[in-house]
Image (cartoon, rainbow, N blue to C red):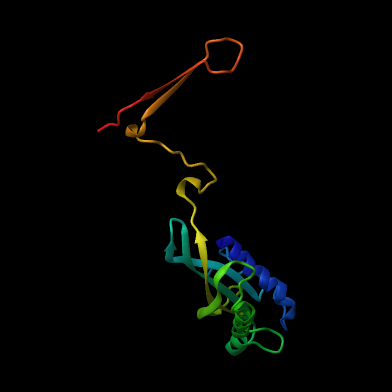
Length: 203
């Protein structure tokens, strides 16, 4: 479910990016692309989608759980001009503020074709970097845009988590009967005699 949600957010942004008044060359799931000690290798502006956490709010029966899921979008912009241009944009380059607001507009109240109990809701915006120059020249602004939604999630049984079949082992005291079948006449598959032995339960 988590991977499907990340993929659905990426697909939504990819689908609607032609409507944006600027180019958005990088849209992807987050996999460590932002490193504060190394030069960025992706194309700016960029948006990365990452799972943050999942919290169980309520249990229904043995396996159904109402869960709140939190995601974050890292929106990244680069500008050779001053700080105002980097964050608010210019005539030719989008700023991190505008990119963050556009991502909220694209995703707010969206279920993305998934069986959500509560659709995506924007929760907060945090600043990660305000004047980083990973390439030594152009300043970068990176914001973290938070979203949450909720699902009714069916938890897998531990024995079945990897597609296995649970092994059922009966305690010794539950072995109450032994059945036996005897084939006396050769050449057929018909039982000629059966016997059933009852066992007393262990104390």
